[in-house]
Length: 192
Image 1 (cartoon, one colour):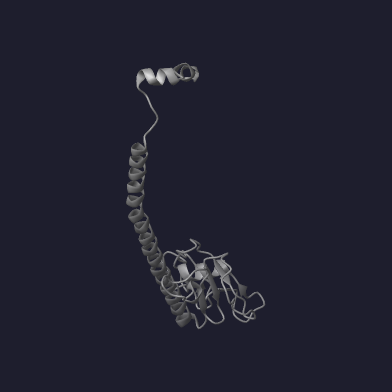
Image 2 (cartoon, one colour; image 1 turned 60 degrees about the vertical axis):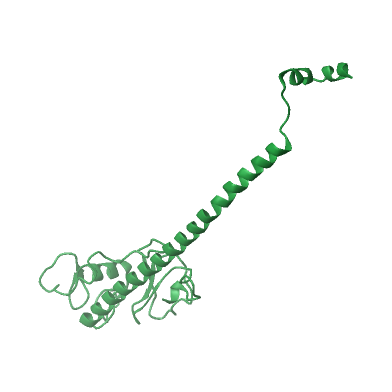
């Protein structure tokens, strides 16, 4: 029988050196250490979830602040010009059209009574500026662009997420062009 064991590869060496495979106790010890490490990782994962929730709340507050600033600037422009910004060309002329570039210039620059904008003050351009740093970034989708809705077009019922904002100059309606909801509620960010 001893001769049979010696013919197995490494069996004679293992007996001579006193080596053997891991015991059941050693397996149990390794399993206990791994379970302890796993338990220690669970609270860290929960903290990460809390941090994500706090970040979401912060982003929604930033979005509300940007909406407030932008809506305030639009209203101040309207008080001084009797219409919302976003049009290029003189009122009542065939050249009159929607213009995102015009909207940006009208809010961030100086303008005359007809809404013609200039980024430097000059005689006759004594209205504004309404936003010192231009159109704010939508903190949710990180875009500053504005989709202008034509006078004869219905305001979108849902965001298309291609721009930071959606604005209809004929009515003054402004919304954040992003998906999602206020954390802990069913209120859509688009409806803020």
